[in-house]
Image (cartoon, rainbow, N blue to C red; front, side, top):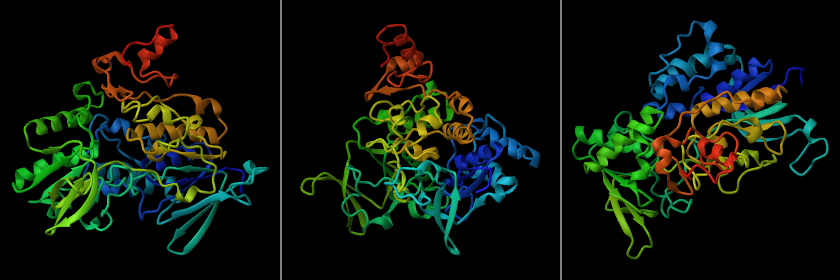
Length: 456
């Protein structure tokens, strides 16, 4: 090992490349291992999607500083890119025109990480041992050693199944040819698969909402197209978001547009529909909720499962992780993002302190750090890796410093109950320090000796 710390970064998505930029800026040596054939491989799977955050929130500052000498033209900060534009105008130049091009190893899938000479059970001297990262490429097994590891491999390729209990529905593997996960391009590359058919969409997040809106537009072009919304919960309005209260305007507009389509009857809605069984029915797909006898069912040609994602920890089994047992996020971060408690869509900025584990030098960041929680924003990841790079470099003051102000979602919930007071603007943004406070106003009131601001 040389004097400059080598930092292994797993994943060359937006947050992974930002991590490499911050590591490089700190005088350390990043090595980025990307499983796909190109940087931004996961983002390339949803190129048709327009982001609901404008360019000003999608470009990392250290990455922009790397790009500046290349003649890169910064996009208009207030405009909204598609994922394809994010790749063409930001990720691709960052990965190919800056010094990061020497650090990225594509088609390199990480298979295991440990400490040199240490299994998980051995403690004495562990902190001084470098990490050993094993990965596969076209040449066969490879080994990399590094003083620190940042895992930003994301969750896109490990989607949640259709089953309501976290397991695949009975028959789900057998019906895989009729199922898509995430957000298929129903009006573009996948149009032939969906046009003129009955398409069921399971989920209540932005991926489900966006797909259903696209299916309504497809139905305008091909009238036989019939979108069906399968909702596990009882209240469709929870998917509509904060509307004009949302500080990310495009996100609010998405929810408002969706609400109007549902109200107009453009989308068939099946509430309290927890999928349990999938089976063939006269060449189509029977989607059942409940026990076989007397189960409710929907007959469709295709099913899109947009029920979120979960992290893959299979290659981290020899590391000492501290994960919340329910959310599967780092234990210090989990209370801030637990969807059982609140769904503000934002969380107070956080960094190395909240993302560290009992394995010094190892960090989870990006979407993977949120475990099964659905509220991650790209700009949150940029702040995470800025702090982590500072921590690895030994700049504890910079690591602890907050350099990000997140936009408010406009509608928050706590304990599963929506707060009208928060929606009307009493939030003041997320709490800065007190994880038991639902918002800044609540935190301030509690510090003053009151029971809270009343919005929780």
